[in-house]
Image 1 (cartoon, helix red, strand yellow):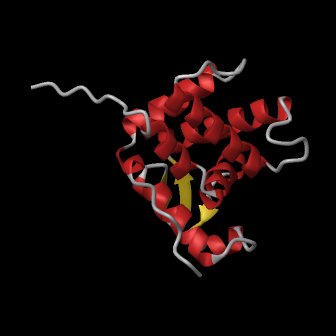
Image 2 (cartoon, one colour):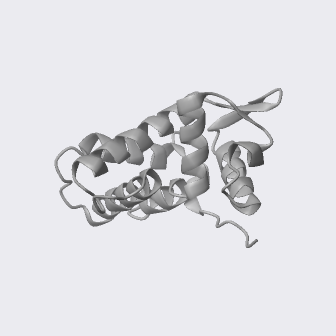
Length: 156
């Protein structure tokens, strides 16, 4: 028997929420930009609380975005694809001053993912240039079994 996986209208929003965690964005883009990071993540991200780092690491592992190579974390192919989505989302947001002209990289990514999720949920027409981003988010939503129930980081 063949089973076809279809998206419910909320799946892209759940996926966007899961992928919008600031620690996850920072972890994936740091590895993408600078190569492997030490498994002692506190050294690479001294400004992030330990609970956020644990959440980012656990989420990245659960989603198959990173793997461990000796004492470092490296991106998998899926992690590289997500890093590209983050970069494209931030570039689109910067070009459109979205959500604001002086937004940070993380805020741009989060806002763009949220915007894409709203488009997918409401069946709206996407703004110019967001078609490939929406396609990438929908692909992640289809292939991401963990996105059904996004977890929140535990309190400090």
